[in-house]
Image 1 (tube, rainbow, N blue to C red):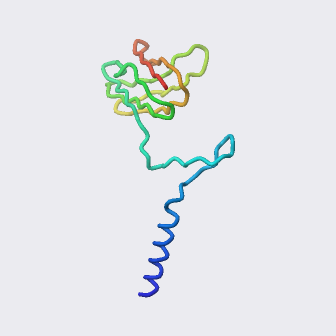
Image 2 (cartoon, rainbow, N blue to C red):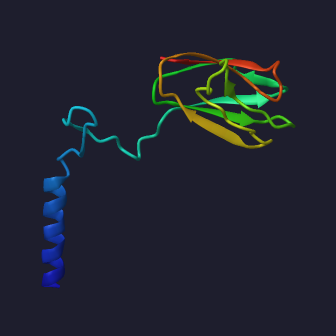
Amino acid sequence: MRRKMCLALTVFFLVTTLAPIPATRRGSRTGECQPAISKTAAARVVTVEIRELKFQPAAVTVHEGETVEWKNDDIVPHTATADGEGEKPIFDSGDIQTGAAWRHVAQQRGTYTYSCTLHPNMHGKLIVE
């Protein structure tokens, strides 16, 4: 019993002593320490529903690092592919089957128009601030 009490007090001491120390990670460019991003923190996800051959809403605004999810609630497959001539698109979902979803993390500020490569009359806009 005495051992269990001693162990409990040791654990209590370590938890209360070490808990206030913030987790850090090494910065990728400058080498300075930065606060670690909590893996339990919920990242913002903005959903674009695909139904009736439309992206709804047709335009969404997110911040860098936030996620956009395209959810196909239509009866046929669709894509969400950034427009661009002669270059690899900034994002390309490939085929999103009925009932499935695809996510993209916005990495760079800008305004990106996109369309469904299977249905070229479907257009949308992603604004990254």
